[in-house]
Image (cartoon, rainbow, N blue to C red; front, side, top):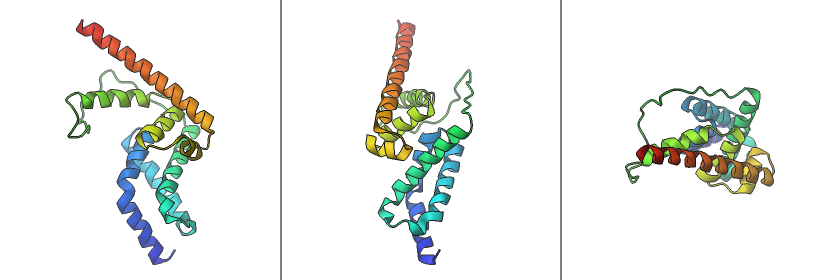
Length: 175
């Protein structure tokens, strides 16, 4: 690869790696896995960088590579989540404009989102965190639009049910 292409790729990585890492985190659910996923996707992209004609679509190419790589990881190894009795205290990144309970709500939503099956979680992340349309999600994940719709519908229904149950418990405790 010539020096100009290598510098262009390095510039892209420097400029967009933060946003790409956020997407990777949402796809796999933990910081270390997200770093591995992003690094793997960037290596795959770098290998093909000289053949990519539309550099404006480079970020989409990396995101698609992350989604397909994450999917292959889900298929290749079983997902093992370890429940804990008490969630450890940790800082919240809800943002400066968030209300006083926003961090707690964000943590609760994230824990419910992480409990969804991998495909449902991927569809919801790409739709609601990344703002992709159904057709784009279908292309990224290599599934039909109907499957995207059904995963989104089932995932949202599960989230609504779990959040409703959580609210009912909280109301019962405060009554």
